[in-house]
Length: 350
Image 1: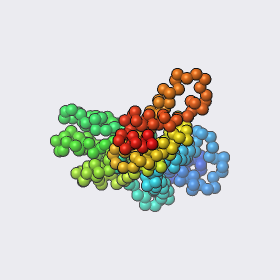
Image 2 (image 1 turned 45 degrees about the horizontal axis):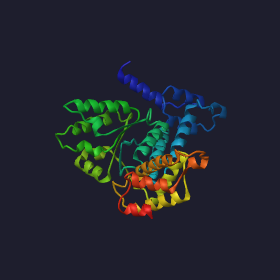
Image 3 (image 1 turned 90 degrees about the horizontal axis):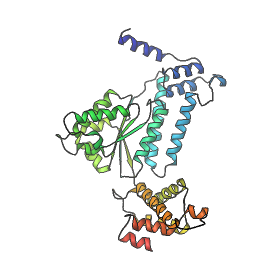
Image 4 (image 1 turned 45 degrees about the vertical axis):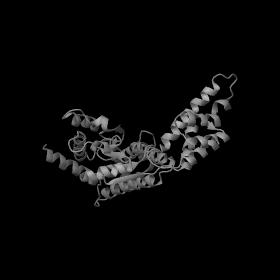
């Protein structure tokens, strides 16, 4: 059969509708429809008997629903990031409704899902990118939904042709999922003659050639990313979705610190919690040097090490001793770990 004949047959097959829930599962298993399309078929087949859709974990649709629910639960559980969460929910709704419209024979809109993430370090950009990959996989948009992270040093080579080779290799690894390029503006750092331009050109071509198999997310500082897009007018139109990641407030950073302690099976004493909360309230200036959640994670991890040093020579340690971070642990983490100086020293010792 000719290539055109195969395409026509595939289109004809996809225009048919499965008549039962068993048909939907068979089509889904054979790869003839996506998970999102299968969901639309099940919603249409309101008269299908309950027994036709197995509730076991082997049910691909049930598994996809569970994955999607888990992703959205993790998104909701993130501290702060209200505008980011809203846009993610909007994207989920858009994809599901377009799939439903296509199933009903209505005009459906296909929009590129490549994105720009703008924000300071430690604001959750990589975490959200990973959740998006999983969400789009559960919706049937991406075959795998995994995340491949890279930066300029991973893509840019040392001689002509080397950059294209390295960039294509990372694209190959990301195929079926998300390619996340951090500090993407660095690709244009050297101007027209820099090898970074070769990486951008290779990336743009892959986005066109594999638009149904790959989502690219460029991330970096807000001002630098805006300058990067302004210097490359063709890129802005290829990345229609922009997410701004705000800095965390002192209250949000304190909640993040408490959660990190719980996840590691530690807790802050009353005095330690007060000292940490006061420290974060004084660390108000926003900007690239804030550190956000990364700052808090490093501080908590150092406080845990200081607690270990405080306890290691003791005998008859209780469970509470092993669980509790004291104010002295937090103080030494701040003063001894390069986390503050000057006014912060005064705050920590207050």
